[in-house]
Image 1 (spheres, rainbow, N blue to C red):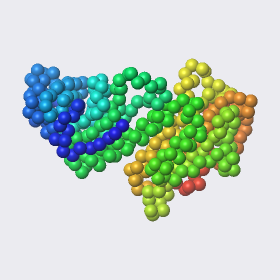
Image 2 (image 1 turned 180 degrees about the vertical axis):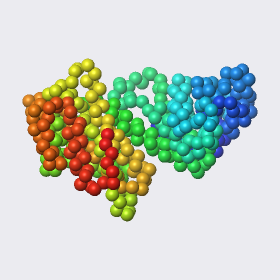
Image 3 (image 1 turned 90 degrees about the horizontal axis):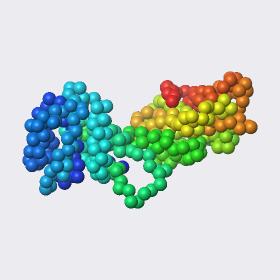
Image 4 (image 1 turned 120 degrees about the vertical axis):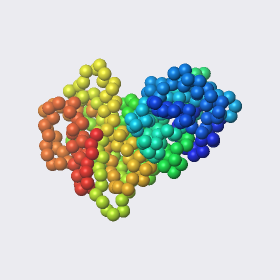
Length: 370
């Protein structure tokens, strides 16, 4: 999805759809953004006079204009102005995207007027996040039907607000939304696509695009490191494990890094202690921690965070086979402790144990695990 910011509301004239937030109890006409011309203001006045638009969070009215003004404006209630929060603005933007989809609009403009209590930068960031996250759809594995009209919004532009702060907030929100959507895409890919090596390739791609240092350990290197707890989990799978290290150097004073550790179980059958078949397909989501770390590192680099941050993802399948770890097996770990495996479905703590022990070598300021 393309994302942009327009400083001058008049540049949104001619838009196919403009979304406007309306607060409860406010003078709706007084709060209308400058992009609306008198003819469309008159249409809004008629709606207000009818009592159909009061600014409540459930309110949704679409009005149609003529000439150069926006062809359509969707007025969305957001509740009381003094109760506005960033989350409410995210939901407002998401609702605007849903209206655009319903009307099959490929382009959406969203007014940033009327959010004074929150602050221009946070308001713009929140709206950008909400719109970007709502516009995402996981369609990459669907068969393409050329005859089916698209319902996807391809471009969103935020309009107005305080130019400097709103522009910066819009950019930050777009970065965060892209990272969230990357995480969702990685999560939704099935186990035959999102293998440990696929996660490693995605980490490398992200590293190239946003200038992160990325190192991938293959199984031979994982063994040399002494990460036998991780290797014990991958033993039953034909897919080789990977240990992914992503590094952002945002501090020049040699500060200790923040270490993010994410579980990358690309498919978890439970191993020999196999899970029930019902719902097992959802075990593709057991790598969500790893996906979160990859996405977070992308956002951290794009936002140029002034801190040293390292992301660690131990990536593996957990499958049953003749070579799989068995209940009762005793394994070693990078931390030097031995572990008796009672249930092979407790694999997450094994791979995270080795990753956390590896991260401890960095003398981090803090470690955060998913």
